Length: 397
Image 1 (cartoon, rainbow, N blue to C red):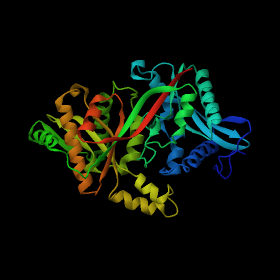
Image 2: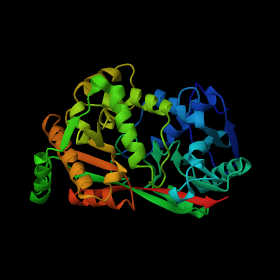
Image 3: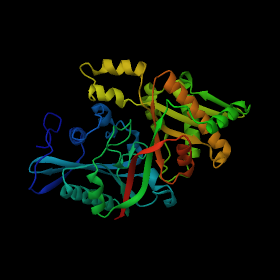
Image 4: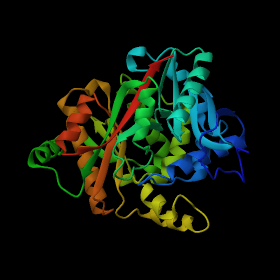
């Protein structure tokens, strides 16, 4: 049997023929999620996530990604035991993008990749490729699980420390298995580690102070009492700022509402900024306390008593790491001194609150595309260092 009491308890079994089974029902999705959790439990520094949240992401009735995507999940069996999993999916919004931006016509994806050994890995990849080919795709990219806005890329460097929220954590040997199956690197994504207890140097302080003296500039906190309006402002800037970026896929209104509701508990006004120029919003920066700090303590389990720890942490995440997952500046300001100045001003405002009110010492920026010169230059200027690298692979079908 694949399923036992709604979960998977063993990922062993070698020497028998590999059987890849498509998953399409609620019970199968639960087994798919639990198999991934079983693989992840083996990894040093992995932080267990809340199971119900993981189930939502693969549920077509709950995750609005499915409204514009075709998804097929697979579990690999050998000797009667589950030994791997993979998703194959097609995002209609990604198909509509220009090929110059990374995706475009004919591009399908694989994600949620876990395998007991290289033979299983090869069988899973070939199965995903076959499904995508049958759907008319001519190229596959991955791992992306499931949306580019969720967990993109395979961790190839940085396994020696714990990931922050919404960043994947994978064993180093997966890269070799994927590359041996004919995949090449399409893009590398970086995250940057920053000591936020340390003030910035004199040059950046002068740039920041100059901005504060400029009557045209106003850096303000996000107002949670007007949450829906603020989300709309941020989304407008994001879709403009990122619209030419590699891998960009626009958010749908349903996805905005879904993400806004789920992430609202992690929004502390002092850690999220909107920059205004002449009274008009032109830039934003979001910062989330790293909920993995709390999840590590409760081992991803809210019951019976983990919810108490979680509620206390959400009221005041003292000492938590801070992740900057998204920032953007309107395209009209790209490659200008103003864009950099606004970024430095928002970073400094958030840094002071994070280190002062919340007692935080570590921040993480990212992910950042390897060829995003503007963001990489900002990361260098604030003396942050690359601490994790993720790779998105591709191959022709």
